[in-house]
Amino acid sequence: MEAPKNIEHQIGGIQNDTLRFGLNSVKSNLVGAHPVESAHQSTKKMQEEMDRRILANTYGSAFPMRMDFERQMLSRFQRPTGAIPSSMLGLESLTGDLDSFGFEDYMNDPRESETVRPLDAHHAMEVRLGLSKGPVAPSFY
Image (cartoon, rainbow, N blue to C red):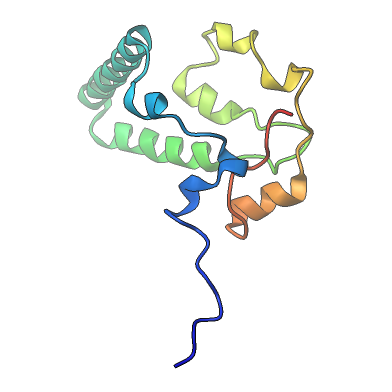
């Protein structure tokens, strides 16, 4: 009998690719989000459910389903990766996020960092089309 000519080199799948995804820690896998962040997320989810019920009672059950369909379409629409990032303006206008101005809008933008790497458009498109594995681009040096 002949020995196999290739040896499987991905132990545990894609999650163990340290060069692309960084080091994993036990703490990050066990500990959840900060309590204030989880409370904010649950409050936001409850508010969205209440808004859906109000819309269903006011306009009928088809209106929230149509809004969900539009949300799904607009969440998939993105610019090709490159110098200009996708702003998701249509999704923000549908969800009403254009009216809110949070700290994430003006603080800690990773593109303004001194250590940010420029995006490799070819690798990013390969990842989007499923031809390559890993994140679109390593963000920092």
